[in-house]
Length: 175
Image 1 (cartoon, rainbow, N blue to C red):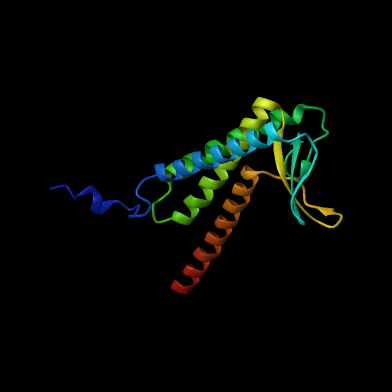
Image 2 (image 1 turned 90 degrees about the vertical axis):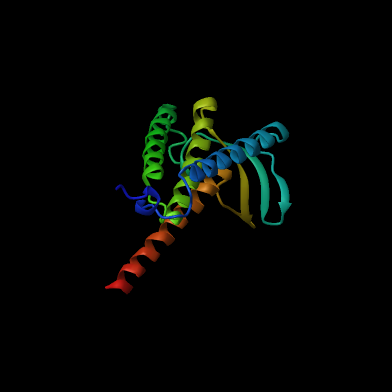
């Protein structure tokens, strides 16, 4: 007699299915798209609107990668970043779909990274640049402007790093 597949599933019980991660990915993409549309339709390019003494909302166009890396490279970087982000997104999607359920922290981090990567990828394909608008600063120092997608990617990477540290500690404790 065959065993009940629910008892032999090595994925565990939480979260119930990979679609949970895909739903979170879609939520990040939607929040990113909506926030960028709102800022683009409301603000003038490079005209800051003060929110707090340390935070502006400033519509900016980033033709490069993080910290405007390669922003003045002549245009070829757009398609380089499209191909790179597409490839990374496919790898992360496959990883998410194959991820054991017990690795929920990894799934959470990957879903955030995937949502952010796709959010910025859509901008790059449609517009040729990424819309940034969150401007954090202190006196004359400004952190490079970023967006919801960038925030999701950063949070996802932090979660993956925390997961790696927790896993290594669990392994050390078991040895």
